[in-house]
Length: 82
Image (cartoon, rainbow, N blue to C red):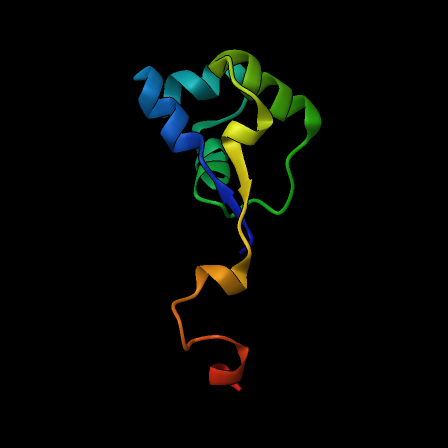
C-alpha cells in the first residue's frame, strides 16, 4: 500500500485513546481501527476534517504517500518478484 496512515502517531502525541477519538469525530471505535490500521479503502473529507480538527493537525500529518518501490528492501523489486 502506498498510503501510510499515521493516526496512531498523532493519538500517541496527544495521549488520546481510540475510544475518545472515535467519540469526538463521530465514528465507532471499530471504524477508527479500520482507518488507523490502513484497511480503509476511502476516507470522507468530512471525516478527515473532523480528525484534523480534533487532533489540531493537517491531513499530511495523518496520511503519507510512500513509493512502494522505494519502500522495499534492495533486491526485492519487481524484477526479483517476477
